[in-house]
Image 1: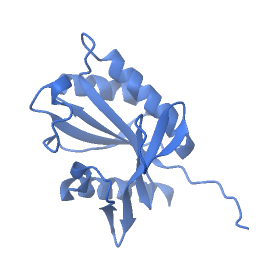
Image 2: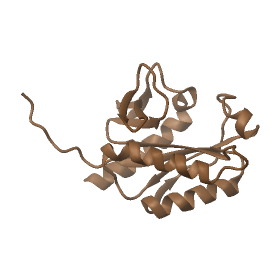
Image 3: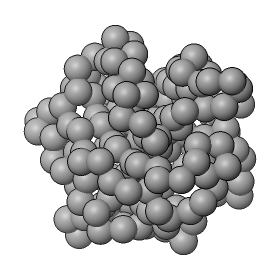
Image 4: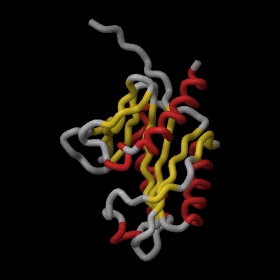
Length: 173
């Protein structure tokens, strides 16, 4: 029988899909009030890997990733996803979202994303929220699984998560 250990705190990250920079800044401000200061913000990247969001948001979408200085307990991810959904609703206009916020966390071994959608590779957390391991760490870098979203498979995104992992690694030492 294995000994039950407490998991180390993990690094909270959020990915954003949006069109207008102003709405991104509003979302980041709200999130900073709830979860603390940021220690990483990616460059603004074009979001061109799917047209899934175009009907709701329009064309010319962008992507940004952030991470927070304060570490979190991994079991709290479901509550963070509920919070980010409420922020999306608060920032919506005429029933349409203006921003998509994808929270997750990383530790030394993996990147985990929260979702409201179930699928064969997702695990139920609580209150309608699921989790998936989107990337795994091996050989000094993150790597995708067969189910990993195409954009998360790009070198650009993997470099972002490797950089955030480096920040996290220094934090837990």
